[in-house]
Length: 113
Length: 113
Image (cartoon, rainbow over all chains, first blue to last red; front, side, top):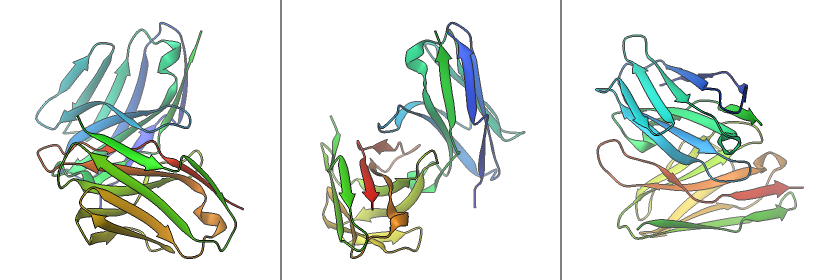
């Protein structure tokens, strides 16, 4: 089955700096890669996703890049703000199916004011 | 728009007691439904998924069970809770399609004492 590894497990940045979270996947059949943000005690929320036929996708301060050859994808947050502090999860899906989603172990991002 | 309701928000139960968590989805028909568990500080573990009424697939053998008595209702149950059942339980839904997006309910924090 698919295996998704996520790094780092914790990340602290100063407000205004950029943050990068990286994930690798094992199954070359994976073709859909969502990212979720989970604030303490709350539900994970989908913040951005990318398909395997796209190399990069942006949404305001958030961007995701995908390298199919190397089988890794990354989340980039620019101009970080304290409200960006949360746990971020990457995931990979074979065939774009939600029941085939494999999640990474999460990254605790802390934005220091 | 689609919404998902999950209750209760928190639950404290003694070891050996039964469990029933309920989830309902509004604004969509024939959703795929899921139960995930998240242990403290850990990732998301898929427990069950359902593609239709009465159709349940189990991902992890345990003393939990799931049922789908109606199209938009998903129930997680246990006859006798174990200490290891403590965690944050999340219901989720998706709809068939390309890049099937997964959306989570607000979660139930279960503490088994």
